[in-house]
Length: 236
Image (cartoon, rainbow, N blue to C red; front, side):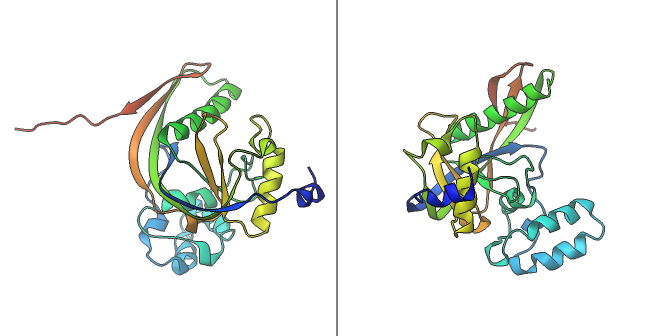
């Protein structure tokens, strides 16, 4: 799909989205607390990154990606690292609504949807790498989403293609360049589920950790998702 083709496409309607609960599941290897949590004012992020990056190679890489997020759309403070990380750790292979040149914060309206979406993508990766059986430790965050987003629910079949991101990436790039805050869409991996793809951090609330899960890969597929629960203990 060319830019000319995208320009001829009608724009999806814009709806005000107010989700008090949305869920994002990531690998537990990613730290839940980081530099973004430690500073109250987002305008100070550049100075903090410059200072800490002198001795931290990982932050030097993040600082470069931080420049992709407009200063007036950054967030900081407790619970913001899982949000900002989606925009400072780019996936060069892209995703449904990004060609890899910018970050997107994906979340689902329901925990079950977040699980099915992440199970699908973990299975693809593990199958492609022919990984032996393994238990993946995953962490769930609860957040909120608020803002005027382009609504693809119930329509836009090409943008929901289960096997190709060609149309969805082109559409997302066009909408983002036109000032869109993000997209709300039907889950492709969970029937009746709903997802959001936020183009900027300030339409997402700070995250709170909720459940922990184990995705059990048997060498061919993830055949079980186990919820990890804390066992109450009594001490003498």
